[in-house]
Length: 191
Image (tube, rainbow, N blue to C red; front, side, top):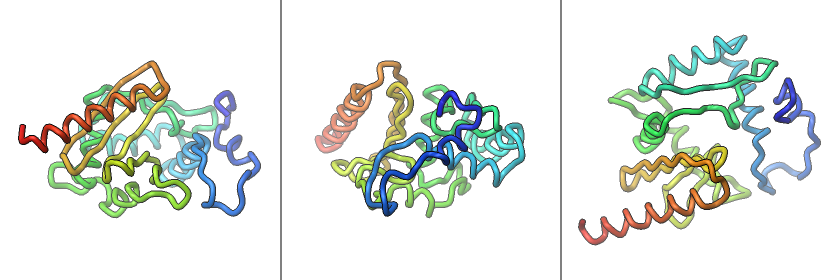
C-alpha cells in the first residue's frame, strides 16, 4: 500500500478477511487512509484545498504549527501516518481532547465526537475511533504514531504527555505509562 500511487484504492481493493464486520479487530493503517479519502472528498477537490481546510478548521484555531502533511499521487492525505510536528504542537492537539474539543472557549470539535473517540470498539476494548484506549486507566487515550510517537491524553488529571521517539516497539508506551502512574501516585500523596 505504501508504495502505491493511490493508497486508498489499494486498501479498498483488498479482500475482507473477517465476516461479519465488527466482530474481529486488527489495526489497519489502510482504514485510516480510506477515512482520509472520504474526508478529502468532503472538503476539497485537491491537496491544497484539503490542507487549507485542515489549517482553517483545526491547526490555525489551536495554534498547532508546524504540521507537515503528505499526499499520495491520487491527492489523498496520508492520514494514517502523515502529520509530522513538534512536541508542543502535538501537545496542543492532545489538550484539545483533554478539554472535550474546546479551545479558548470555542468548541473546535463536537463534544459528541470526542466522547465517541473514547468509546471502546465492539471488537476491542483498547481501541476507540482512531485512538487507543487504556482499560486500566479509564479515560486515558493514546495516539500512537510511527516509530513510537505517543500523544497521551488523561482528562481526569488534566494531563497531556507527548513523547517523540524513533525506537518503535512497546518501549515508548511503557515509558508513558510509568509517567502516568507516577503522576497519579503523586496526586494521591498530595504532592
